[in-house]
Image (cartoon, rainbow, N blue to C red; front, side, top):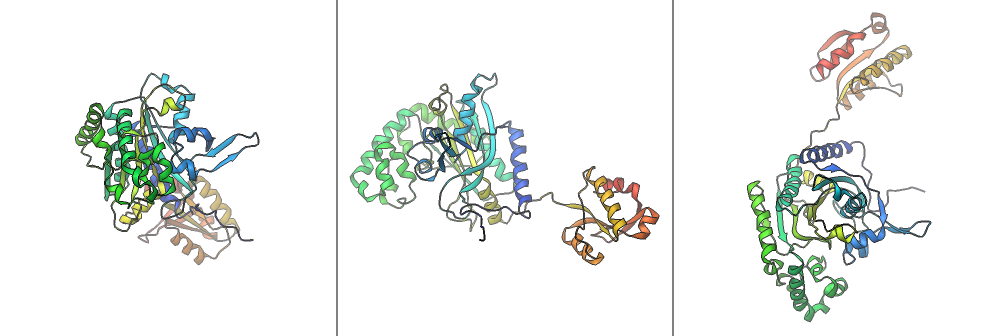
Length: 422
């Protein structure tokens, strides 16, 4: 029987991982600069956490979660997103009592959703996200958006579009909900079964439907921004003022609602405008979720965050033809001729590695010519050949592969020579 990777998952092979590592290093460095400290939560949580936190009218909860009962009969779910778990940890560990607020968290790891596989979208995918919990200041909204934009620009992406909307407060949402029901109800039979179920439960989610997005009533639906209360409109204007000060360009889209129930006030998406990127252009999405902490059992504490798929970031880099500079260089390849030379090579390579010098040698007894070809394929900066004469002289010719220049160096001076010429 031939085993294959499960549908909707992928193997990330050694020739691909340097790009992942480069992106991950950028994410970690910018998290440090913006002061978002890493949190690591379990890969599975109680199912009810996602039902309550993400929303039982969402596609994620209704169709996409990997849920199972453990041996104790408890319902558990592989995490489909990171916010609910981060907020659960915030509540459980009473981070709301920390003297410095807001608490700024970042996370990175695999998420799981049972959905149709397509370019840049998998059933197991890697997500990076941040949460700023404990502040209702519009300046933190702008900071979160700025961090997301900074990530994409740092890795070299240029074809980007930031789209904003305000989902308003409860009063705004209630008024808009009534208007949406009035708008869709006469023709709801023309919509999919999901939309029909959402009409009374959460009509805002109809605007996010993938099946019926071309229906004429979608384009004429009441805009949420027309129902903003004075305080909500003022808050949204302040967010935009901060983005203007930061020099971040954006577009306001009244139809942007996001796919999770917990959002209110600021909502945003960052999209790729690169030609050939694909039909699904969203790279990153996020927004404010005042009320979520309380829903999960904590105090009434506001929060905002975003999440991005690493797979889609790499796809955008490919679409724009951006090549990442990855640190995968081989400093030196040691060619050994004979058993005594192999012993000496192993000794030298060990001394190189203890000083951070990337080194390798042959382990399948190939001839000298084949070993040299291997050094060339691996992109070794230097090559040394150790045979009987080199062992007798305790010295070796160090060849720089790019220039072809050689210099004779005694064994005990090799480490210093390589450190000076890395």
